[in-house]
Image (cartoon, rainbow, N blue to C red; front, side, top):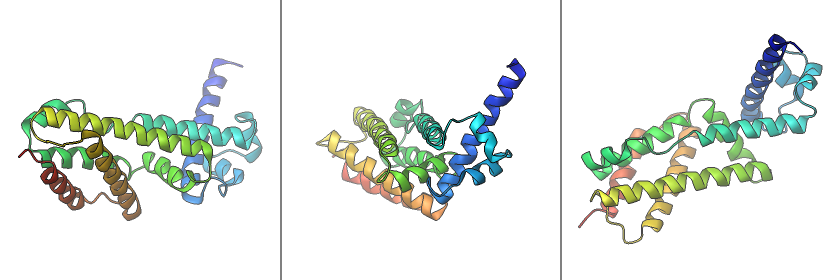
Length: 202
């Protein structure tokens, strides 16, 4: 195979995976037919087998794709330590949470979230991705609580409990935002104020 054909094949494979993830997010993993996927990718159904040995391999490729997408979805901005030093607890929470939530209401992260939300109770592989995403978010939320405590902006008696509660709320806000099709800035601001007040330095 020439390098040009190999490059074209890789691009076609990537296009199929992206189209499949979009269709699976709309219809469900099992309901998105190979014909629909091939059509969306601009190829014939038999041509799918030039890139994937089976439907199972295609689905696993989609799951690996969304797993990679979510691994790149960092909750904390790189300059969080500086932000925590210079702004109120409520302002920091609002900015960080709203930034993160907004990432999930547009593709391709939106497609990834919908697949996880619809399949995590039925598909072991998707459940694994969902758990990894939860643990990744929780770890970064714990880091945020620690940074804000160190900056004198929060004073939780139990940092782990505070982080668990905050993580749960963020995941709930993402779910609501995906359903609504927009991130509710007022809702994020209101929660940030409540959380900041609850764990305010006395």
